Length: 146
Image (cartoon, rainbow, N blue to C red; front, side, top):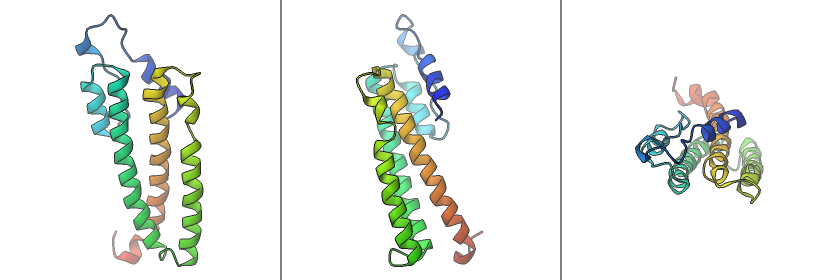
């Protein structure tokens, strides 16, 4: 998610004086379950953290499936391409673990830790899923899929 969209999320959080039933935050459309969770939450950071935690878990599960398929498509861990892909994935994991970390520092408020930081992490995971999907799509013809 771009910073502009993340800031839009923060700006869309209703003021504390509004009734609890009207407190909603727009969620990325890429995960309808996240959108639904945010919509039915009562607008608390705790509930946002829960919603995004579940979304991150789903994204990680999808990433693991796509990773296994891409690695298989390139010939497995023992192939030259597989070894290279494993190295790339290790580097990506290091990046993923460091990226967006500044949102969880004390200099940012709780909204950043409950919405913007997790949104950043989701974007990074989704981008990697897209990259791995591209690798696999190259091999679809070889698997007989179209």
